[in-house]
Amino acid sequence: MSSGYNSTMNEKHAEETRSFRDPMASRLEAAKLRREALEAPDTLEQYPCVDDLYDGFYLMIEGLGEDASQYFLGAEGIVCSILVFREETGCLHSEDGRSLVQLPDAVVARLAAHSATGWRIMIFVSAILLHLETKRAALDLAFICWAPLEDAYDAALATFARNIAHRLSSGDRAGVELSQEQFVHVLRSDGNWYLTPETKREPLDAGVVVYKGRRNGIERLTGYALKHRVGCNALAIVFWTALALGIIALIWHYLSAA
Image 1 (spheres, helix red, strand yellow):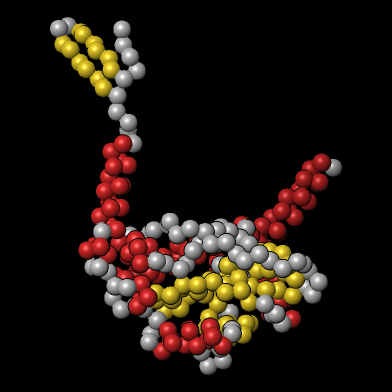
Image 2 (cartoon, rainbow, N blue to C red; image 1 turned 45 degrees about the horizontal axis):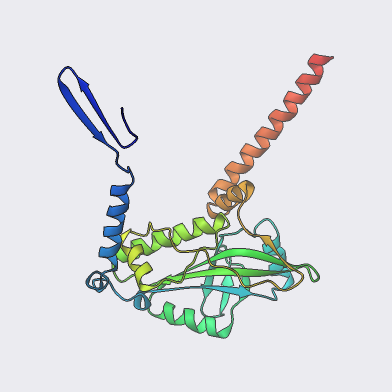
């Protein structure tokens, strides 16, 4: 007789004993040991303070003008697109230089202080909102800033920013404010740490809806084309070639049927 946990098999005077083992037990134990080692005070102290190297936050921008609203509500307004901070004006520009958003004074001062000490500043469109009554846009923006003091840390935080951007494009409002423990996780994983929790957006006012909250397939293609301007001509050639071939195929079909 055999059980689910232990079985004994005798064959040609050879005895084999098998014992049940949880296949995940060793992995869970290893993960627990790694987590305990990482959270140990002496390990955390080996890394710089998060406040000295990193700053991440979200910001809601209301009251966009007519031109900016048309831009973000149109084809060029894409979730996870990058905006560029101009310290001299306190404005955010598109990557091709178009002035779009005026930042609050407190945020301008915060970013200017980072810029003055050589910090990298990445600003992503997290979501595009619409005021139904006025047909004006509002923006939910994610800011990720860090000091590139050491190459290894710089590379890790740049990778982390790219991973946050990927989550934003999928509709995940990933947390960008890091505790010291989370910061160490990011550095130790070379930026490939995905466990920052999703950050809930403040409740929207009545009459305000999320107009664009993630990228669809067309927007991914458009975003690539806008980022790599050289690819726009190639995409246009592919489109017009496909259109011409489709027309030729339809004409051939009707001629053959006749």
